[in-house]
Amino acid sequence: MRWYISVGAVLVAGAVAGSDVASFAAPNPKTQLSDGKDKPAVDVELILAVDVSYSMDMDELAVQREGYAQAIVSKEFLQALKAGQTGKIAVTYFEWAASNDQKIIIPWRVIDGPETADAVSEEILKTPIRRASRTSISGAINFAMPLFEENPYHGLRRVIDISGDGPNNNGGPVLAARDAALEKGITINGLPIMVKEPSYSTMDIENLDFYYEDCVIGGPGSFVVSIKDRDKFKEAIRTKLLLEVAGRTPERPLVPVAEKEPRVSCLIGEKIWQDRWGR
Image (tube, rainbow, N blue to C red; front, side, top):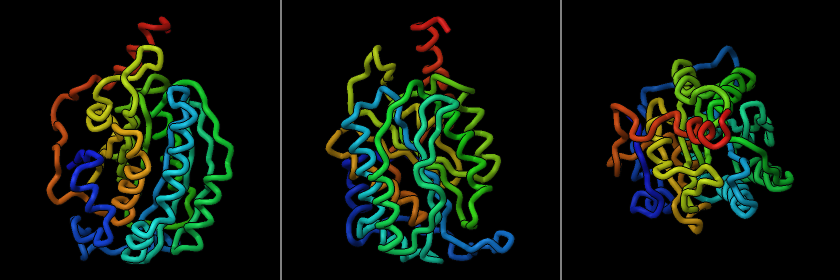
């Protein structure tokens, strides 16, 4: 089951409050971490896949970076981390644009408390901001999947966290990449960024949240946190990371995701690019 969360709603307030985890459904307590062929155990292997396409302006890119860096060291995040079975997560952070353009900013790191969280946060902030052409969500997913095999840690859950402000318009179809990840038991969550009015020049679309819900995310407990207000950018990132680290899903989802035909064509980005550029 997949769910949609709107930032600014009561659910978000509960997620970032000091009582955080009480308002979310906990994972099955009977589920136990396996040793993963003698790999050290963590609660979740989390890949942060962050859009740096040209449709993101420099201010958005800076706020996005700051949002992840601040979320990782927040009191709520550290509380959720401490509440896990091992009190540890493994995280890697990469930025993406075209199907052949992905750059790892943070190789796999373990976060197990304030010191390791501070180190990852500082590393995110010190890396120069860049922008690149095209938007390939499928490329990001395909790049992310092998990273789990390279991770020296073993988690109860494997999660790809994708943020972006537009639909897939480069590389293979997003559905094929998503389905390949789901077959491997990977969960994909989404952060559609919708702070600007849709524009032909930037290839934005209306209802990007529907597109993410129906075409991008998937797996047990998967969800979307949409950003429709620039002022809520950092809050949304913090909320999403809190849910992912705590392994929570909404007990009373606000908007159930359609289980039938996608409400927005999963090839809409490719069509817009074809109509505009003829290739």
